[in-house]
Length: 319
Length: 319
Image (cartoon, rainbow over all chains, first blue to last red; front, side, top):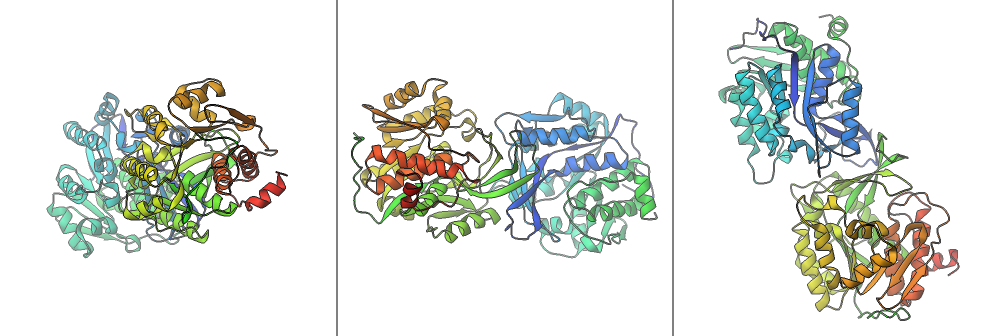
């Protein structure tokens, strides 16, 4: 049971958070455009786990990424970018005969419809290096991407098992999207089935709707909690977020004053959350900080922006 | 046997050429860049068969395209583009749960290394509409793309069979590339195995090298001819092209004076070739025209450029 007024205790380990899963190129329209009419695209570093690893490093905690890319120009671009950001890339696997995964998306103030081009990302294998990284990290994080296709799904299943044995906190982003799954596979059921094996989940309202259909945020939370979620946060866009441990819940308002680009807003929330729990905040105090990090991110274009250290964020948002 | 001093005779059919296969988005770096370091990309209409269909229409003959795209923003872009160019799109199949195929490529004066993102293109099915189009066309054209993966491979095999029965000239671009084939499959053997079933092939020097290893153009031609090629043209970049019917050969020099972008140069050569054989030129006279069309294309950026009518090309290049 996670108590909302207590901080989460971690064992003394070398690394704070290991994010596992998709490392990819985001190709975003140069102009605001909901229908992909634009002919000019800008390439960005992307993939939620990698974004989180970059963000938390800027906020002030230690991170590692485990991902798979192709042996091509885009894979090189992603690895170079991580290295320039001083992220250890020894767990980035370079896969033969596979293209670095790519997502094409419209720059949009609402939820844009992406086109997915997946190849190398789901070829992630369970290696000895990955095993060591899981053991030596306080938290592991993954999204629905790696569990949606094999062999990455098997890698995550083994990773969850090892994390339990190693007292590593298991956090899962249930960002189910039908386009991630192969036609004929029941991705919703799979995502629901792993909720009881993980410690913390953070769906957005859209994620919840894709899994359970339209409903109130409170009802959606109950569905996740019934399926075994231990601590959950549902993010509600401009309506803030709610956290619940199944016993009590807290509602938080957004701190966003200016929305330039929503890409990566969820990742920045996660990043604030991880930084605060590692820094020893109670879960209740943690939340305001998460809202501040995502509010800061919304002011800028791109999935990963230059975030200040966590002390600076606290100062800006008077926390 | 194709006689070099004679024109090719066609039955009186409704359509001149049906191109079958990949319809896709080319995402090209904004700057000259051999290593994909560029962050700005421009979207172009692409895919060799579609490019040829667009080109020959501009040059002055009738064309149809059979391809498969996803139900997404890129699929819509490609279909809209064809319709704006007054190309009949009734043979463009829109596939559920597949992304419109995409190729990312560096703008380059040499042969750029592409990153392939294939999904919808190889889902092309053999339909009654396609059957009618094959019967009613004088020529069918396809490249190595659709034969590299199933179910499109089966569609092409059925198409070849029907084309033989319908007196439709079968032209094949043996542009073999290992990245098109699934790992473990022998794409080279497959490409070699279909040479005796088709009428005309046009490999580039690079295509020949990928299939047979490095050798002189004359030796490469002999290898294709031994495998059953009836009429073949090998294009040699700045060194022109050679045509052979297995009995005699003609060497042509390039007419290019200015090289801005090589993307689509092979397609413009094919387009010139098809236009000239439909217009009743002898194969020998045809070749100068092909060289002129590709020389014109090389002066401009993009896989498909605004080509003048064939009479205008003849005038510009004093043919």
